[in-house]
Amino acid sequence: MAQTALLVCDAVEGNALRIARILDLFAIPWQQLSPRALVDRAPDAAAGSYGVVCPMAILTRVRAERGRVNGLPPLIDAAESVFVYGADATPATRELLRDWSQSESATVAETEGPASLCTISRHVPTICGPMSGLQVSVPSLQPQLVFSGLSIEPLISVREGCVFGILRSQGTAWYLASSAAVIDLGQPVEQGYFDVADSLLSAVPIVMYIRQAFADIMLQPVECGACLIIDDPVLRPHYGFIDFHRLARCAVEHNFSCSIAFIPWNWRRSRSSVVELFKRNRDRLSISVHGCDHTGAEFGGSSSGWLNVLAKRASARMEKHRGRTGLEHDAVMVFPQGAFSTVAPGVLKHNGFMAAVNTEVSPLDAPSGTRIADVWQMAILRYADFPIFTRRYAGHGLHNFAFDMLLGKPCLLVAHHDDFQHDGRGVLEFIDRLNRLDVALAWRPLGDLVRRAYRARWHGGGQQVRMFASEIMLENGGSTPRQAAVEKLEHGIAAVDRVRVDDRPVEFSQAGELLRFAVELTPRSRSLVRIDYRDGGASPSRGYSLRAHGQAAARRYLSELRDECQARAPRVYRLAGTARTWLAGAMRR
Image (tube, rainbow, N blue to C red):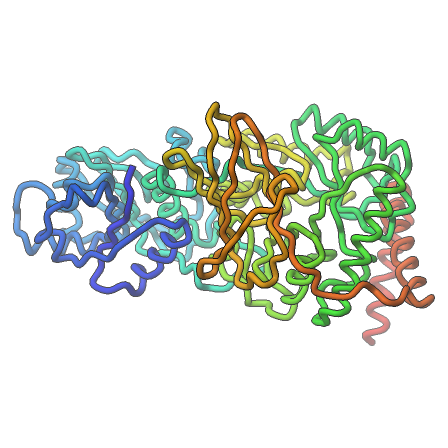
């Protein structure tokens, strides 16, 4: 496998800069190479193996300058692989393809109309990974160029032919992408979530190539964790359309785990029969933290003092619930209504939460603040270096879940009680489709998933680890001791109180923007690593006002009444919806 990337360009700008940013995201070493160096420079054996990334236009230009010289330029001839993007239908490109393929019929053709359906090959799972065999509808506004007449192994195709594939020629693997477009990771996520269908041909080919060509040096996820998260239910035998005993059986039959995003306000209301059910099925059923009162956009405010009150109150209620029921909870926040502010992640970080999970990717006070590069990471770290793991609705499409996994992100599926109408067939069928993807999903409770959501690679006798959450579980399955060099993005080391490994403090330091420390792993052992942050705010000095308590209670009971009516009195629910619509219209008039 290649150890570095040679980026061939006249200047690191435009598409070359975009590719450089993608290489940086995956921590792939790269260096710029001028087009002239393809001809003038000889391979340096001491520099190690490499892959070349180059636009088709530069290769045709170099070929024209060299004339019809037999063989490839020296640097390309010695490359492990070459990624070429941006084909055109010119005679120069056609001649270049014929040289590579040794086929006189090799050419580039334009589709008759806009290409609207892309098919990912199911025959090369080592490259296509979880996306193998999928068909993706793309909002194409123009015809596409396809390769034809050459022995190319298609990876992505449209109806008329291959738009991304592998051509093996003269000992070199050529990854050919017909599209000249390259996704810009610096752009904001314009809608509530990133949809890869909007940029399939500008994003997927380069990601597939990098994962394959540089697999040995990439920090890889240790597993592909998965969890279904259901928002809001009170822990009683039936809530809306949810039957918890049936849910537990389905979790075993369909192989999934489920975390209930539990509203702390309900801490007194859990039924013992359901609590015992969760305890008996700890590997399948768990609870996480869903806001505090779940009133409005409660974590969308900008007051750090009030957010601190909410975070501490939520934690205190969850502890009371644990004391009352004996049921543990995961210190992971699921934001109510998906609403959070730029201030909230830092407050949660300093209140003992190890991560957050959310569907919306941008805060209320910075709707364009989150970049594509942020959502391509295992978790968003833009806000106070606190991890926000992104989750998706089934309606986002299987292709988006698969692309998340291709990037190395966990698979987090969100549902509500009304998704379990008709015995939850829709949810269960989608989970079955997830389980059929070409990836080994590790279904876990949400907290366990977060603790294993880190990147690592072994080199020599040690392990390099990049952590995201404040807790991770490290494992050494070997028969000899090993050391893990752990790092985490942390701009403010002063905020760190201590780092513990199995409750033993260890020394830590800061190198630039990274917090670093070492962990000694004994043979066949597991170690829990935890970063403790200083508490940034005082405990709540006052309780609820009667008015605030009444408002929270009214919202909770009315929300539950709505959910129960939807499940058990659908006619009443429909009439209430009609009345609500009429009342809203009357108020506008």
